[in-house]
Image (cartoon, rainbow, N blue to C red):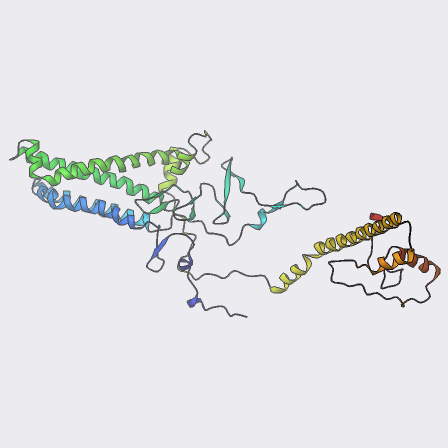
Length: 424
C-alpha cells in the first residue's frame, strides 16, 4: 500500500489548476490567460501621464503663484495615475469569484425515468437544468459539463479562462481577467477613475493652450505649434473618454438596475422580471458597501486527497452486480436448448414420413449421436449403466426422453438441464 506523501511534497492547488489562468509569485497572484494585454493597458495610462507631467504640467507650476497652486496640478495628475494603476492591478490580479470544480457529477441528482417498459428497468438520467427560488422568483440554473456542478444563480462559464465565475459580468480583454463577484467593484472604480483622469488631462492641456494664446502666441495654431504635446494629449484624451466614459455610464446604469453585462445582452429581449433588483439605492449599496466575500480557493495549499472506498466493498459490488444478468443468460440458454431439440425432433419425423417409416431404432441411434451445442461451461457426460433397474415410472420417463434423442447423466427424476416444458 502506497504511503501518502508528506505535506511539503504534495502538489499545490495552483500547480494542478485545470483552468487557463496564470499564476505568479507562488500562487499569490492569479491572472487570466491573456495577462499580456495588461501591460498594454498600463502603457496606455502611464505614457500619456508621463507626457503630460513633462511637457504640460511642468510649465503650469508658476502660473498660479498664490499658495504655489501650480504644483498641485502636477501632484493631482500623479496621484490620479497611481490610483488608476492600483485599481487596474487589483482588478486583474485577484480571484474574480471562481466556483470550485467537482471531481464527479452530484450523485443526488441522478434518477430513473418512467418512460421504459414494465419488464425493463428505467434509464439513469441526469437533469441539465433545475429551478431555484430567488426573492420569490423561479430562476433556472444550468449544469456545467466542465466543472461538473450546478452553477449558482448569475454564474456563467467563461470560455477564455475555462472557469465558472459567480455573478459573471464579462471577460475584459483590457484587464486580462474575468469580471465577477469579487472584482466588479474595483473594475467600476478603475473605469470611472480613468474617465476622471482623461477629463483632468484634457482640461489641463486646454488650459495650457489658453495661457499660451494669452501670451506670445495669440492664435490657436501658433499655440498648438508651440506645444505639440498638448495637441496630442487633447486628441488622445478625447478618444479615450468616449471609451472609458461610455463604459462608466453603461455600468452605472447596470448597477442601478442590478444587472450584469452578460444578463443585459442575453436576456434583454426576453422581458423576464429581474429577480435581483432591490431598488436603485440598495443596488448601489450592495456593490460598494458590502464586504467582498473571501475566495473559495486556497491556491497555495497542498492538494487534499479524496477519501476512497475500501476495496472490499468494491469487490462485493462486482460480485453482486451480474447476478441478475447471469440468471437471465442461463434461462435463455435453457429455452434455446429446448427449441433446438424440438426442431431436431420434427426434422427427423419429417424424414421418416418421406422415406416411409424406416427403422425407428436406427433413427433413435442417429439422434442420440447428435450433439447439442451449448454456450455454457458445463458438459453433460453420458452414463448409460448408472441406473441398471429403474422403477416403472422412471423407465417410462427414460423411454420418453430416449425417443426424443436426449441422453441424461443423472437419474431421470433429476435431469441435468431444467427444461421448461410449460413455457413451450
